[in-house]
Every structure is written in structure tokens, then in C-alpha cells.
Length: 257
Length: 257
Image (cartoon, rainbow over all chains, first blue to last red; front, side, top):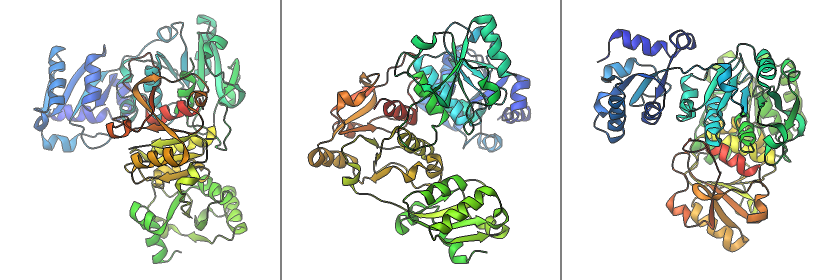
């Protein structure tokens, strides 16, 4: 049985402003909560459906929580009806502290994936998951990008949000300039009009200190952003589709780093 | 003002069984409807929000419809309230005949992308869009895959559904056998355990007559399917993510064909 205060807090975390105010976000499901508990992230609270506590996956989560001294609260049917989640209640969820990082942490000498005005949380989550697969550690988000701690984005990362560094810029053009002047990074863009992307070993052409920049789903790289780019690349296609999904384009770039 | 029969028919097409029974599906939005009208697909009916008929994009759609002698019906606010769509009414939609194709049409001597138990309509739509981008013409769906004419899948294709051939198998293992015996195709699978995917020119290694087979989002290639595969490939990763999104994996494969 959860307190009214806990329920209210959980539901506030569905909103971006409260996630920012509290510096916390919610991870849903046994897989995601398990990944959070195995990572360096600070897990503040685990909420579990009391009727599922004997299930094997829930016992693994509960044990991992105890090992890290994270409080595990069990909830009943009535609580579950009052907790907002992206879908039906996933059996377990956790409140996790955001590991906000500074620009110096993502400027670690290896490639950065920058996402300007990405609006779709599923696409952002998929890009974070793909980055984690290919060992890309650094994500830079523009001021108009969707919140990476949005529950749908978190779910789409499949636990990778705990292993990738994310810097949220308040002015992407300015951040790219700082990355250039202070850290020696150049920015390149992916767009419909650019030179063909090399088949392999992209960093041989660009160098490790490169920000690979993607525009919005519908409009590509914006004119303001284009002036910050050393060059543009295009993923060569021979069919008739007008464009690629941004998560697909980012995956193809990351597969060639 | 739409008739009750038209409204009922439109809403029936939200369901897979009626789409199969009538051999029709719905395309939503000015972009999708425009693509349908420009393609070889048989467009049966266009439904447009009468209050938007003077908008430039709607006028282009209406003109394209007239040119092809497709009836364009205008609907009012009351109709719109009764039409089921994936989101708010997109201004215009069309009823299109499914261009169902035979196995011989997808066995055209070039690579085939096979999707076994793909459940997510967005992932399927993205794969069709990506295939169209890279000039891959042939899609083979397993018996447990989501309906490609599901409205969400159609929307995610961004019009590419009209340019890619789709064969819906009722028994994928059997279809792979037929493709081998009758058309000389070999099947390979993408999985967590396989040889590393070559960086480029994948067909140099596999030959053009290859079916690239992908399993479900959560379980990869099933054991039953595995026995039909000449070999398995893995997309090399060096991070810690457990897997890649299936649309991302398919995109990386198609980018190397």
C-alpha cells in the first residue's frame, strides 16, 4: 500500500517539468529496473506489484534492490489503478536519479551523436540503444529535442540509458561552437544533400573528435544548424523513398564508426 | 456528408479480418494519399475534410484524384467524429486496393527481406520505408508477423508501401523451402550468434538470390526457422546493449547490399 505522497510523486514524474525539478525519472518493467540496479545509476525506490512478488523475475529484481539497499515497496490492485504508466502497469517500476553530465564528460575524445529537434521518444530511445550496441558513448541533445527521460524514450532504450552519457544543450549551435573551440571537435551533418557516406571506417575520414549531427524527423538539418557544420553526408540510396527514419540513419552512421 | 454504409466500411477497415475480406486498406494523410495516387495502386475512394478543401496540399490531392477518376468525397465535422483513425483525423484518407502479389513476384532474382514474427507495426513500416530507400524490392512476412496494411504500419512506410512487393506467407519455413527448390534462393538469418556481417557488399558473399531473415523483436530467430538457414550473421557491436531494434538491424543489413 503506497502513501498518497508516493503516488502523487510517481505521477508527477510523468511530466517533464517535475522530472527536471526533482532530477528523477521512472523506469518501467523488470528488465529496465534490473538494468538500473546493475548500473551505476542511483535507484531511489522500487515499486512492485505485491501479487507478483513470487515470480522469478520479480525476485531477481527484489534481491538486486536489497543488495543495493534500495527500498522496495509493494503495491496492491488499488494503487496500481492510480499509478500512471505508458501502458498497463508493468509489474515493477523504479524511481531513478538522473545522471546529468557536463559537456566535458561527453567531449571525451570519441564521436558524439547530436540530435537537433528529434521529437519522437521511440526514435530517441532506439538511437540510445543503438549507440550502446556500437559502443558510442556520447549523446548531445538540442534544445528542441524530446526529453530522454520521457517514459516512452526510457522504455525504448531497453536499459541502455544507464550506459550512455547524455548532455542536454540549451543552444545547440552554441554548444557545437564550444565543442570546436574548447575541445577540438568538428561537426558534420547528415542530410539529403551531402557527399556519400563512406562504406566503412567513417572516423578515418572525419577523425574521432567529430559530432555527427541529425536534424528533425521531418525537416532534416535546419539552416541555422547547417552553418555550424564542416560538411554534410548523405546515406546513398537507389530507391524512391524520400528519406530514412532518423533512428535508421543514425544506426547506419554508428555502424560505420 | 458520408453515408452510413461508407462510414461503416471505413471503420471496418481498421480491423485485419475486414482488410483481408475486402482486399482493401486505408492510407491516412495528404502525403500518403498523394503517394498512393501517384503509384500504380488502385485507389478506390478519397475522403477529405471539406473545411480543408482550399488548402494547397488538399488541392493537389484532389486534382490527382480527379486525374485518375477516383471519387473524392468531402466530409463534415460530424462525419470526422465517427471515423476511426490512428490519431486525430489527418485531413484526408484513401481506401486503396491491396496489391497482393505471388511468391514468383518477390522471387525476382534480387534479395528478399523476410520477417518472421515481427509484431510492431511501426517497425514493419520503417523496414518497408528503408527497403524502398535502398532499392530492396521484396518483403516476405511470416505467418505471425503483424499485418502490413495495419494503419500504423502503413503510416510508418511514408508511402513506400506502394513501391515494395510484399508476400504474406502462411508457413514461413515452407516458403523458404519453396524459394530454395523452385527459385534457387538460400536463406540466411540475423541473430545474436553468427559470423560477423561483412562491412560492405554483403551479396558478394551471399549471392543476389538470398533471403535475409529476421526473427521477432524479443526472441530472435526461432529454432524451427534456424534449421532452414544456410548460415547466420551477427552485426558486430562493442557496447553492452543486449540487442538491436529489428528495424535498425534490417537497415544495417540493407545498407550493405
